Amino acid sequence: MKLSAPQFWRVKENQYKLVITICKNCGRKTVFKRPICPHCGSDGVEYIESAGIGVVEEFTKVYYKRDSSEDRLPEVVGVVKLREGVRVVGEIVGIRSDEVREGMEVEAVLRKYVSDEPYGIIYYGLKFKPV
Image (cartoon, rainbow, N blue to C red):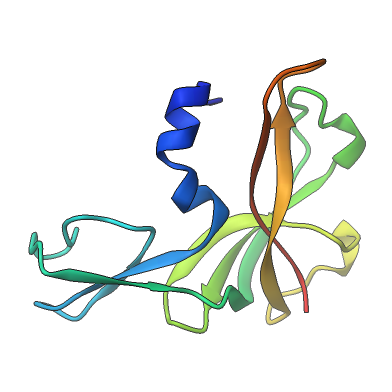
């Protein structure tokens, strides 16, 4: 689902960097900035910015064509366990799809998602590339 420009700007902090929420009550960590712990409901949370380095735990290849993405098929989408201990799902780029493997170390990079052609907004977000 594509967000409108106002919606995208409201959530851009979670699109442009990996922020981890740490609950002061239960001690659990979750990815993305959240005002309340999703595990215990406490509002006593603190935020840290992730280094964006992690390991691919699982991945799959996506062959479905979306708007203007046919040149990138197949896309590789993986579950990445960050050094901070949380898992995040993201596209793996900068490597051929047949070279991706479990256990591979990756880092988060800012890349173009999609644009409103020909003169519209360009949407950016985080993807993962091999270290």
